[in-house]
Amino acid sequence: MFERLKDDRPNDDPVKLVVGILSADRKLLEQVLSALAEGFGTVSVKSPEIPFSFTDYYEKEMGPNLIRQWVGFHGLIESEQLSDFKHTTGSLEKRFLGPNNKRRVNLDPGMLSLHNFVLASTKGFAHRIYLRDGIYADLALIFQSGKFQPLAWTYPDYQIPVCHEFLMRCRKELLAEAAEQRTGHDSPFIKAS
Image (tube, rainbow, N blue to C red; front, top):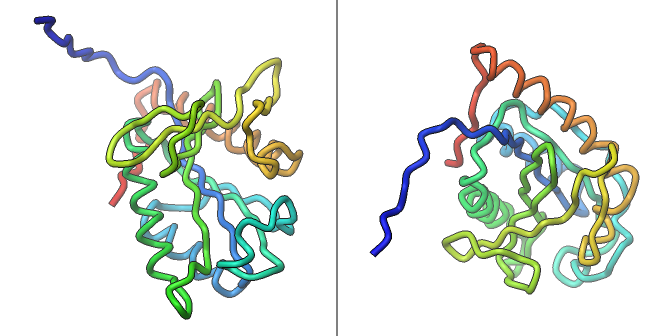
């Protein structure tokens, strides 16, 4: 039997929590942002709100005229927590259910590293890696040649300039927070609740 070796080195690949928000209700967006900040800490980066016209997949459940927004949180996270964040955001979606138990908001947590952007998913697929507790890691974008590059399976809304500009702002913050952490200054780690 092989012995599993424990690596006591610090994680040299810092990551940042990002959440994609989808809803048709602007007032609800404000409530959701407040709940996310309550659970995950200060929202430090926000994308503009954009119309979600990439697919009609969510319209039956959530209605027409959907709005997409992304938010990034202050501080670094541990990559091992991605499944915890997916479960936490799933609970938050249930908190805001509408009539007939239909979702009024869709929350997609992901983690941004210096090399890529990975979404959490509850659905398995050929390009998704099982993590634990029913959650998969979905490599959505890679960072190459100074920009984010989509892959064959990347969702259309994650391929647009607005998303990439937002992630570049998050990446800049990630670099600064990682540098602070390396120099020994306090840098908060976010924990899933």
